[in-house]
Length: 410
Image (cartoon, rainbow, N blue to C red; front, side, top):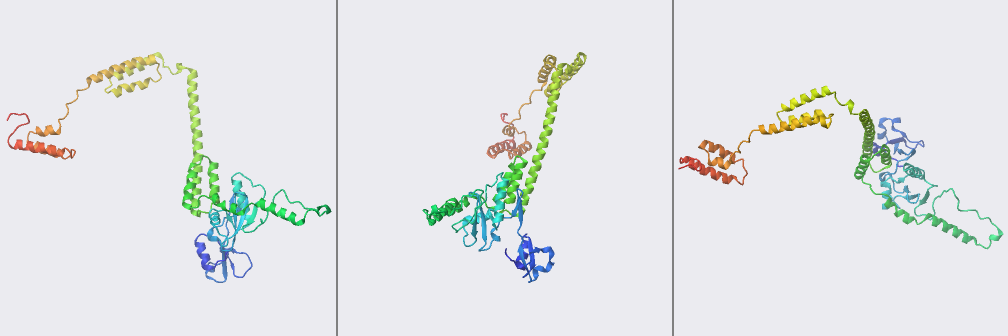
């Protein structure tokens, strides 16, 4: 635990840390700041520390993983190694390596053995796994593991009997030591494998990664699993984790709403299919109109078709015969075809195309009309404007000298 002075404690408080306080020299535990006056930071007879925050994952509570800025030189760091179900103790500063720093950045380092084991258990539980036996705790640099608790004991006491005299005691001890080393495995190789365990430490990339996972989640359970991983991640600041949790809540609400909408759609679809099935069972007789009503309806349609002024209006009458049989629709189709032929014959012949601008310039009756056409030249493509202006100049010369249109006698 790092003891802070007033200035350091105030700076840590501004950075969002929870600060505890006590009087200098007292053996009592640190207490919350609300138990002290507001001027406590300016007094030299008080000392402070940062409150170690805890977190809960899969129902297991443990202290939040260490961060690099929380560790002092000489402090023991307990690193979780998932490859061999073991915990490595390293003295920070003396045994600091790239693998150790990566483990701390990625949230796999604790301040003591108890919390390291609790975090290991929680990580396994959140993935639906359960640790078998206890963790092997090894202090890097030592020849023997600190402790190995297993359900099955491999070492059995050797009774001191007379017939054991043929086996030297030193040889027994050596064999026992070799068995322990074989069970432990080469520490250096396991230590190097820590680098493979961690992929991403950049907070921005982690936010992008978790955002994509949340948006791609198909079920509420999948979103909850991602939120559990957010709580265990020690490389994003609190604000980033809060925003990702809000995104997770929105995704859960969306998934819940979509389930409700799908249920409503399925009910409506079933109701529609039920109505159609009932209509099929009852037969066409219920849909068919009585003879006299059908005849009246037919006469109205034929009259509307005969008075239709456009092809669209004539064709629109067919929509009123959807429930009719093919035989009943036949007179309507014939009337529509007849009216379409009549409308086509009634169309006025198309007007002759407007002469080109060049022809209009050549036949300009006077200078005023030529000036108007010259203005139109400016709106044409730049590539043909010089040619058109040539015709304008030529026609202007003709009009100024009393010439008529092109082809007229001089």
